[in-house]
Length: 466
Image (cartoon, rainbow, N blue to C red):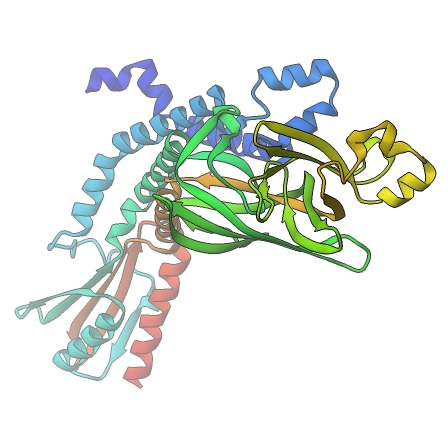
């Protein structure tokens, strides 16, 4: 072990300076990671940079700092540094703790060179004063020892607390190690992903972002978007958008929940955030079918939907939905199959206006004739916009580990900054029919707090004496 401690590598990793430097570097890197967009957001940011600068940023992994090789190296260095520092210094702290917890406090040298203000005289007898001071000491100190010397007519009192404060720094070290472990667990077993789901659609696949590239990941369940709702302010800007989701396993709905901005929903440890939304190409077409003067059917459909004409062995299919076909308005392309026969034609929303401006169009271009499949006539009432919801998908199994580490970090700092190993000695001597009381103390840190506590006992002793 001695040979190991003299080793240069051991000295390097056990250096407190290394700890300080690593904390400064990691903090600086974290600030950079906050300023420079990471993951998916980095794509747009990189497009505004000069090509050479964007290349350098990419090579330095500045768009993916928290998954970069060099950031992982910094975390490993900090991990090793904390472990070795704790290993090296723990035996000394353990000896101090055992000495502090010893049942034999040092009575002999505690009262040497005692200042006059810490010595009081009381008219009370030794026994009465000893009981009084012992009770006073027990109010502040959980561990109080008493030693009586009948031949010298002297009573010694000793109170101590806070011996555990010697381990405060190790709790801080342990908590940092736990936090680093949680970060590593999250990086290795967790993921950040994105998925777009059309209203009324579903998906069991998400697209990984960040350090895992933009690859697909199949989920163990299916996410179905029941409804996407959108509210606007008077000026037209979005006010609120919300996705009502269902989670299915084995084609059975297991859980339902809404997702709003800043109000995610969690299922099987995976959290879904409302990220954005968009309009699906084509949307939903509202189509009316008439036969003569009789309305046969009216339905709403998206591209790919099929329908049947009542009473006939005829199948229809919506092939395409266009918001503005060739600049002459909304249109839907329909395919009609009857036996071996198939017809395809377009149905325009404003067909009357088109014919008025282009007489003879239907004869010249039968493909634009909405009554091509006789005796039925198709008409397009309107095209409704169909939205998709953009969801950010996140799984971080290390979050509870990081939370536990943060709790221990807070606890460690509380011990380090607000607790100390403090001892109080009180000596009571029978003198001239009264009692001479001497009070002193010692603390491994926080001398101001020790002085405040000594003043407390002296003032309490004075008041009781009066």
